[in-house]
Length: 149
Image (cartoon, rainbow, N blue to C red):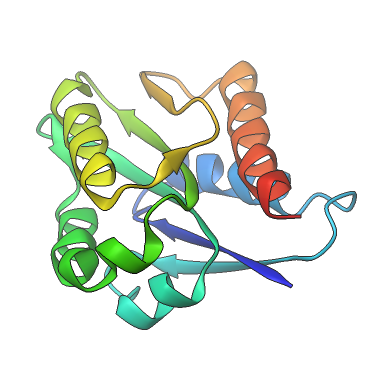
Protein backbone atom coordinates (compact mmCIF):
# COMPACT_ATOMS: atom_id res chain seq x y z
CA UNK A 1 0.00 0.00 0.00
CA UNK A 2 1.24 3.48 -0.88
CA UNK A 3 1.24 6.31 1.63
CA UNK A 4 0.25 9.90 0.89
CA UNK A 5 1.47 12.34 3.52
CA UNK A 6 -0.57 15.52 3.88
CA UNK A 7 1.36 18.17 5.81
CA UNK A 8 -0.68 21.24 6.57
CA UNK A 9 -1.02 24.32 8.70
CA UNK A 10 -4.72 25.10 9.03
CA UNK A 11 -5.35 27.50 11.92
CA UNK A 12 -8.57 29.02 10.50
CA UNK A 13 -11.94 27.70 9.43
CA UNK A 14 -11.29 28.65 5.78
CA UNK A 15 -8.00 26.74 5.77
CA UNK A 16 -9.60 23.71 7.41
CA UNK A 17 -12.34 23.78 4.76
CA UNK A 18 -9.73 23.72 1.98
CA UNK A 19 -7.86 20.90 3.74
CA UNK A 20 -11.08 18.90 4.12
CA UNK A 21 -11.71 19.21 0.37
CA UNK A 22 -8.15 18.05 -0.42
CA UNK A 23 -8.61 15.07 1.90
CA UNK A 24 -11.97 14.19 0.35
CA UNK A 25 -10.23 13.92 -3.00
CA UNK A 26 -7.30 11.96 -1.62
CA UNK A 27 -9.66 9.53 0.12
CA UNK A 28 -12.05 9.08 -2.79
CA UNK A 29 -13.54 5.57 -2.64
CA UNK A 30 -12.40 4.78 -6.19
CA UNK A 31 -8.76 5.20 -5.17
CA UNK A 32 -7.50 1.92 -3.83
CA UNK A 33 -4.19 1.09 -2.23
CA UNK A 34 -3.47 4.54 -0.83
CA UNK A 35 -3.22 5.27 2.88
CA UNK A 36 -3.60 8.97 3.68
CA UNK A 37 -1.68 10.27 6.68
CA UNK A 38 -2.47 13.82 7.81
CA UNK A 39 -0.10 15.73 10.08
CA UNK A 40 0.13 19.31 11.26
CA UNK A 41 3.27 20.99 9.93
CA UNK A 42 4.63 21.37 13.47
CA UNK A 43 4.34 17.61 14.09
CA UNK A 44 5.51 16.10 10.79
CA UNK A 45 9.09 14.91 10.85
CA UNK A 46 11.84 13.12 9.00
CA UNK A 47 10.47 9.60 9.53
CA UNK A 48 7.03 10.66 8.29
CA UNK A 49 8.47 12.08 5.07
CA UNK A 50 10.71 9.07 4.46
CA UNK A 51 7.81 6.65 5.01
CA UNK A 52 5.57 8.41 2.47
CA UNK A 53 5.42 7.81 -1.26
CA UNK A 54 3.92 11.22 -2.12
CA UNK A 55 2.99 14.52 -0.52
CA UNK A 56 0.37 17.25 -0.39
CA UNK A 57 1.35 20.43 1.41
CA UNK A 58 -1.04 23.13 2.60
CA UNK A 59 -0.27 26.52 4.06
CA UNK A 60 -1.63 30.00 4.49
CA UNK A 61 0.34 32.87 3.02
CA UNK A 62 1.35 34.87 6.09
CA UNK A 63 2.85 38.29 5.36
CA UNK A 64 3.38 37.04 1.81
CA UNK A 65 5.31 33.91 2.84
CA UNK A 66 4.58 30.30 3.83
CA UNK A 67 3.48 29.93 7.44
CA UNK A 68 6.11 29.68 10.15
CA UNK A 69 4.86 26.17 10.85
CA UNK A 70 5.45 25.07 7.24
CA UNK A 71 8.87 26.73 7.25
CA UNK A 72 9.70 24.83 10.45
CA UNK A 73 8.64 21.58 8.75
CA UNK A 74 10.95 22.22 5.81
CA UNK A 75 13.80 23.35 8.09
CA UNK A 76 13.44 20.12 10.08
CA UNK A 77 13.33 17.62 7.22
CA UNK A 78 15.06 19.16 4.21
CA UNK A 79 18.66 17.95 4.56
CA UNK A 80 17.58 14.55 5.91
CA UNK A 81 15.13 13.57 3.16
CA UNK A 82 16.36 15.35 0.04
CA UNK A 83 18.20 12.53 -1.69
CA UNK A 84 15.97 9.64 -0.65
CA UNK A 85 12.68 11.32 -1.60
CA UNK A 86 13.77 12.91 -4.89
CA UNK A 87 11.26 12.48 -7.73
CA UNK A 88 8.37 11.59 -5.43
CA UNK A 89 5.02 13.10 -6.49
CA UNK A 90 3.55 16.10 -4.73
CA UNK A 91 1.41 19.19 -4.99
CA UNK A 92 0.34 22.00 -2.69
CA UNK A 93 -2.23 24.61 -1.87
CA UNK A 94 -1.73 28.13 -0.56
CA UNK A 95 -4.45 30.51 0.57
CA UNK A 96 -3.78 34.13 1.40
CA UNK A 97 -5.70 37.19 2.38
CA UNK A 98 -3.89 39.61 0.09
CA UNK A 99 -0.75 38.23 -1.54
CA UNK A 100 0.67 34.75 -2.13
CA UNK A 101 3.67 35.67 -4.29
CA UNK A 102 6.39 35.05 -1.70
CA UNK A 103 4.72 31.91 -0.38
CA UNK A 104 4.41 30.47 -3.87
CA UNK A 105 8.03 31.33 -4.67
CA UNK A 106 9.20 29.69 -1.44
CA UNK A 107 7.18 26.54 -2.06
CA UNK A 108 8.54 26.26 -5.59
CA UNK A 109 12.15 26.82 -4.52
CA UNK A 110 12.05 24.43 -1.57
CA UNK A 111 10.31 21.60 -3.41
CA UNK A 112 12.58 22.06 -6.43
CA UNK A 113 15.53 21.72 -4.08
CA UNK A 114 14.00 18.55 -2.68
CA UNK A 115 13.68 17.23 -6.21
CA UNK A 116 9.98 16.37 -5.82
CA UNK A 117 7.83 15.99 -8.94
CA UNK A 118 4.79 18.25 -9.26
CA UNK A 119 1.89 16.05 -10.42
CA UNK A 120 -1.11 18.33 -9.94
CA UNK A 121 -1.56 22.02 -10.61
CA UNK A 122 -1.10 23.83 -7.28
CA UNK A 123 -4.10 25.67 -5.89
CA UNK A 124 -2.97 29.18 -5.00
CA UNK A 125 -5.43 31.97 -4.36
CA UNK A 126 -6.47 34.92 -2.22
CA UNK A 127 -9.88 35.88 -1.03
CA UNK A 128 -13.06 33.90 -0.70
CA UNK A 129 -13.13 30.12 -0.50
CA UNK A 130 -15.68 29.37 -3.22
CA UNK A 131 -17.22 26.11 -4.39
CA UNK A 132 -15.05 26.25 -7.52
CA UNK A 133 -11.93 26.51 -5.39
CA UNK A 134 -13.06 23.66 -3.16
CA UNK A 135 -13.65 21.53 -6.26
CA UNK A 136 -10.09 22.35 -7.37
CA UNK A 137 -8.83 21.35 -3.91
CA UNK A 138 -10.67 18.04 -4.13
CA UNK A 139 -9.20 17.43 -7.58
CA UNK A 140 -5.71 18.27 -6.30
CA UNK A 141 -5.94 15.69 -3.49
CA UNK A 142 -7.43 13.07 -5.78
CA UNK A 143 -4.82 13.60 -8.49
CA UNK A 144 -1.86 13.21 -6.17
CA UNK A 145 -3.42 10.14 -4.55
CA UNK A 146 -4.18 8.64 -7.96
CA UNK A 147 -0.50 8.78 -8.89
CA UNK A 148 0.12 6.44 -5.94
CA UNK A 149 -2.73 3.98 -6.49
